[in-house]
Amino acid sequence: MHIALLIFDQFSNLCLANCLEPLRAANTLNRSPIFSWQILTHDGGAALSSSAMQVLPQAGLSDLAPCDYLFVLSSYGHEHHDTPDTRRALRQASAKARIIVGMDTAPWLLASAGLLEGRRATVHWDLLDGFKERFLQVEAERSRLVRDGRVITCAGAMSALDMTLGLIADHAGLAARLDVEALFMQGDPPVDTIHARGTVTDPTVRRALALMRENLEKPLSLLELSRLLSCQSRTLDRRFRSRLGAPPGTVYRHLRLSSARKMLEGSTLSVAEIALRNGYESPAAMARAMKRYYGVTPSSLRLG
Image (cartoon, rainbow, N blue to C red; front, side, top):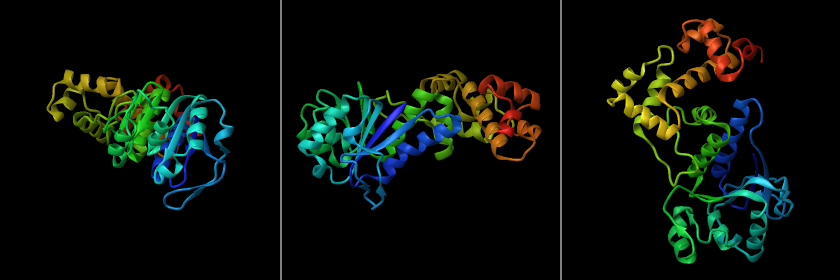
């Protein structure tokens, strides 16, 4: 997936990092690139963040080639950026992207360019009332994240992280999302994918994931897990399938194998010790599971 990321002066560093760092992590964990990106500015010159960090782009917006996603990021000073030239450039650029993503205050610029007419959208909540009054043809919502057709809008830096994690799940799978999420938010639950109208946090799923991560060496049965969570097994199964798209056992197995893989790649523990720490009765049992799941053997990961 190729992403073009257009930034305007006074953009939020946090919003930019919440997009790029999860994508970088997904590429690293996958051991081959899933995502590529190019940073653009309107005129091809350097952009200055709200905290005075200078970013040098790879190109100007007029050099944009066809891409899968066009991310547009503006934060402070959005009214200064809202010019006839910007509107025209955004309309031209939108024709080269399959999906357009407006982050923070950028939905204002997209709406001004006519790219949100007749669509549902959100914007940074500080601007929401003014946004509703200005753009009557847009169905504005007080949501963190909204997708309508080929347009996604995010209300700020943390919703940009939600969106990026959803993008990783869509294009690299649930396992990749869980791995990336664990790097940045150990113990927290995944949120719904970018196809959802908003973010859904299920406390039962959150507690279940925490218990799974705390009990890798001696995995809990579904019955034990349900008892600790004070819910029925079928309820837990239904919630996992609804929130994560997979039953608890599949998610639990992934967490164990992911932990084993990280230990093989980043520690000097023996294969037998790693198997024990991740709930496998023998190195051979772990090797078989890893071969089925990742298509690799523990020895090849250790050598890599």
